[in-house]
Image (cartoon, rainbow, N blue to C red; front, side, top):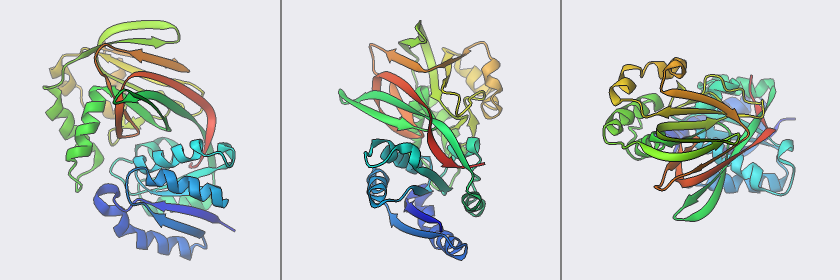
Length: 306
C-alpha cells in the first residue's frame, strides 16, 4: 500500500502547478497511489504542512512544485521532533522553473516521468547542509539539499525572484538577470575559513553545495557528490566583467572551473565573515546576510530518485 502526503504549491512557476495538479492527481489515482494532499497558501506553508503530516504518521512526503517547495519540506523534516528524519522519504514532482536539485539525483523535469520514479520506489540517501546566517541582525538557520550561493549569485537570485517572467524558463530568467545585474554589481571582500585555511580576497561569487546544478541548469559544482559528507565550494575571484560574458556558456557544462579566476575546495565546515553585508540564497530562495557558518550532515536525507 502506497501512503503518501502530497504538498502542492499552487503558485509554483507562475501558477503552473495548480493547472497541472488535476492531471497529476489523475495519474497518481490511476496508478493506485494512496495519498492525502494539501495546497500551500504562502511562504513557509509547505514547512508547516510537512510537520503536520509527519505528526499524523506520514513518512513519504511528496512536493508538487520547484526547488523552493522541496527546500521548505526538507526544513520541516529536520525541524520536527516526532520521528528521526532518516525515517522520512522525500519526493518531488517538479513544476517549478528551475528543478535544479532533481538533475543530480535523477528526478526528470517532466511530471509524468517523475511519477514513474516514485512508482519504482528507488531510494537515494544524500547529505544535507545547514547554514547559520543573519536577517536584520537576527541569527537564523536554514537546511538545504542543493546549493547555497553568495555575493553576485545571491543578488541575481533576488532580482530573478522579484522580476521573473513566469512564462520563461528558470535558466532564461537567471541569465537575463545575470546580465542586467553584472555591470551594477561591486565585488566584495570577505574572510573565508575553509578547513582551517583563511582566504581573504575580493570575490565575485561563491557557491557551497551538495549537488551539481543551480540557476536553471548551470553546472555550478560539477564535481559534487551528493553523499560524500563534504561540501563542494567554488570561489570566483574578481574576474573582469567581459570575461563573465565571454565564458558564460561554460557555466552550463561546468568547464568554467578551469578558468584562472576559479578555485575549488571540499570541506565539512565553512565560515565567512565580512565588514559589509554579503547576501545569501539557498536552493533558489533569497535569505539574509553574513556572517555565515555552514555545516554538513552526511547521508541524512532519503529521497526518491534514480
